[in-house]
Amino acid sequence: MKVYAITEFVGHCPVGQSAVIVARGRTHAVLLLRKAMPGRGLNGDQPLNESDLIEIDQHHAGALILQDGNY
Image (cartoon, rainbow, N blue to C red):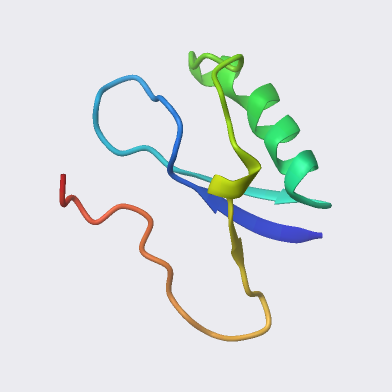
């Protein structure tokens, strides 16, 4: 399994939103995110691009800042 993060989708407000997804690959990650969105009141039919997924390297320690508040 791979771990992905994404910040490029429409949330409830025009502020930052992000998700972390554990999936077999990018296509599977988008599918899982689409399925999870309606449960949080989000539009699961919105455009989601596999290229917007950030794969997180699980083999090296590090930090990934998803939202830094700089809008």
